[in-house]
Image (tube, rainbow, N blue to C red):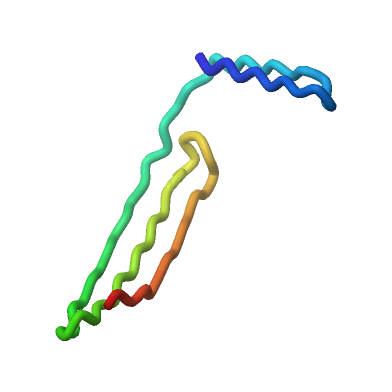
Length: 67
């Protein structure tokens, strides 16, 4: 069960209660290539949902470099 309460001086109070719980299955992959001399590239991707909770869930990051 999730219970969320928000309260502020300028806005009215809101309370949300949700009793349904689920977890979405995700497939994820991460790739890192080290070029040497402190340089590397990382790429990350995930895909999921498959109709269990969300219809589709995805995220793609990359490439990022580090030194």
